[in-house]
Length: 68
Image 1 (cartoon, rainbow, N blue to C red):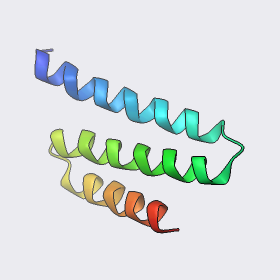
Image 2 (cartoon, rainbow, N blue to C red; image 1 turned 30 degrees about the vertical axis):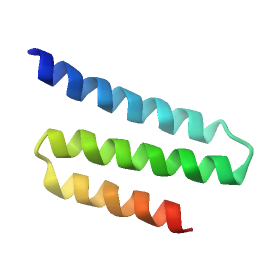
Image 3 (spheres, helix red, strand yellow; image 1 turned 90 degrees about the horizontal axis):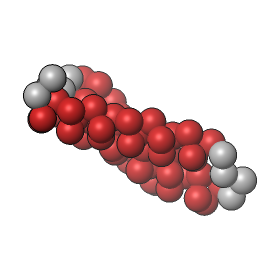
């Protein structure tokens, strides 16, 4: 695994960590913000992996979480 692929995987692990942290929240506002950050981080991760459909889906989810 080269350095760039390791960087992409670190972004994926960060998205996973944000998701776990989000579901540990009791405050609804903080939950939505963390879920937005998780979805956008996942969108970047998938885009870097050249998974455009997954990145678009995660991006739409992030926008929807932010607007709700």
